[in-house]
Image (cartoon, rainbow, N blue to C red):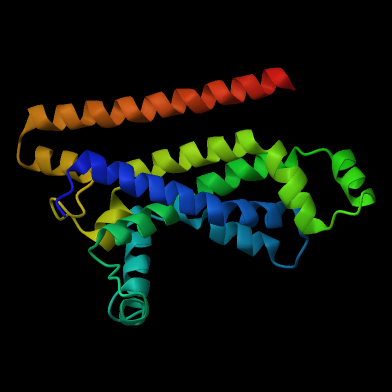
Length: 220
């Protein structure tokens, strides 16, 4: 299938933000609500993609998912190839987006009222019931904001995605890579068009998140 950069970028970012939310929400809840030894280490590992150079992060993922890592087992078991494929781009973007999602959701969970939790426990709720019936409905703004920020981070990722998925036109070339190729080819007109498109999407979603936070603050 021939994927132009914009549809591919939106597809990758959508899947990555969804996966980051599914993985990041319980991780954020555990980091806030469950005391355990070595929590500082877990938080450090979660935040590592924010501080590691993107190419280094991509190298680690390539080593893990490539032919010398889990790549052959994944291909035999699931029938899909990760490296140099759109799914490789999704995985790289998910790992890059995960810290932002976890941080955003952590803030929302930490702000939950203890009185509400105690009332739920008195009504017979266990921890799973609290999470499902009380926490999730109360942190929906944080989940939405985390999902949008994760989408933006996945949409703009370059280094890690390039290392894992490559820069294959029509297959793994996202908007960021297309801008890079246009600049390398001295096609400034196309680079400006793609840059304007990516900037418009980014700022539009960023302003949405900021407006959502403003409304949440006013409601409180």
